[in-house]
Amino acid sequence: MRIVSKVFYYIRYRLGWFYTLQNFPKGENKDSVLKLDVYSKKTVALIPHADDEIIGLGTLLSNDKSIELVYFGYLGTNYTDENYNIRINEFKEYCSFSNIKYSIYDLNSIEKIKDAKIILLPSLVDWHEEHRKLNFLLKDICSAHGLHPQIVWYNISVYCSVTNKVRYIFQERKEQRKKYRDFKRIYVSQNSLPILRFKIKERLYGREVNRYSAEKFLYFNFDEWLMVVDRFEKNNFEDGFTEIKKNLNDLQKVDKISKRIYCSILG
Image (cartoon, rainbow, N blue to C red; front, side):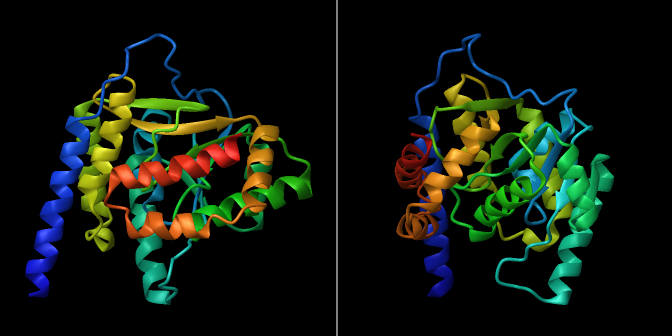
């Protein structure tokens, strides 16, 4: 009975994702659509969990090998030595396979962060507490060392059609297919993740700019980001994040909740 129930919900969600995609209006193909530009600038990406880098910015990383990753080794609710070793080995394999520079977060990583002109990290609007945690840690690091980098948020699982401060990395169909083919081959421990939902999310981002698919980012100067973090800390969004987590497979509902939070902190 349990298996039948799981199959029913899986089919239901899949149909819902495709329905949302098919009924999502295509944006206009304008020259004003802003592409994310971090090329030729010292850029560091902060990675809380192994696989966040490929889901959130895999195509960006495939296009720009100068970006260096700093991996924090967060493990959600499974902080065991066995899980740590599995996850870090998968992360290292992906970086080696993709020819991406990386380091494991320690005191030496602070120097890499200090040298960065642009820092990528997960959006605060995310159900996962450890994704949000990284913003607060970076704020402390910047305060301690007098840093003022530009900040770029990437997103992992929370779909949102917010249009303020956004940038895109366009994906052709073959690029998106390769991204998730690499994911399945390397991140074996994460084979239960709903890959189709991530793909549909990127297809929706592509629809926003009349492309096949896209990775979507939010781009801030340092003072803007600091103001956003301060606004976030003064509010209590836990009920909203609980609702997002409970409804992750309902893209329309997640969009409604996440957009409300974004509007509150972006001003």
